[in-house]
Image (cartoon, rainbow, N blue to C red; front, top):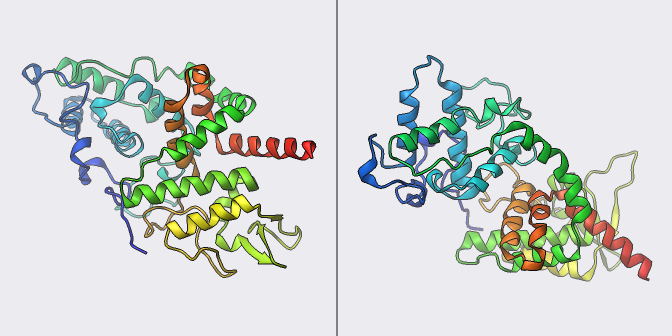
Length: 349
């Protein structure tokens, strides 16, 4: 199957990357009129470097790392130039930095032993926001002062007390309030995913399969991360799902695969260039990266975020008050909903 590489290859400091022109910020929605510009900067990264050069402290390493991390998030996660970010985007960045699950592929897992290695985060858990948010607010202030931007979108997004309070309650709120109405909106969001490129087609079909997997089989997240296509196997004329996380002490989890799930599996595999159904020796990841040469598995959290962002845009007026539930939903939110529905179906029968 044809291999697709992301434009950024692997995560590196922004000056070492060549982002698409649309991400440079020359046409950022928050750019000030050019006649007000008092620094030599036409792109966001040039304006950030001008800010870093203006610092008088002898140790700007942490500030530079923080700003480079922020740029990567803006370019890769929001697909926006930094000069187009809104206050709501900055709050999403705060949530991203505080959520180890969301940024799992962004932190260093191995010891520091190679000088050519660079990671946005140096460890899984981070102390207060002053470490990962250092320099971002004053950078925007610098941009405004020197006529590069018309305003500072960060506002109170980095207010630690409010941020932590939101994070503590997000999972419980989403778990208790996620219902059938929101699930239907999520399904509409999946149907609305773009199919305008080969990568987009693969990503859309992956998302469809991923959510069907949650709904019909409700595996634990680790089952998806560690599992491969051989988890689906045919026995006695029926297709079964067996968790790959079995041991000698515990018998592997075995579940009959519903017809709808089997159809979703066939659609996913054929759209990705695989045979319609897997063999027992098929070691293909259950949820893989669109860029098939990637050595790391594609993280499920990113699929959840992409679909939730689109679902929020599709919320009808009568459900607009539930946008925060979608925004806060985790893998376990959807899995809990699937298990509750299975329980309801069983009681109806």
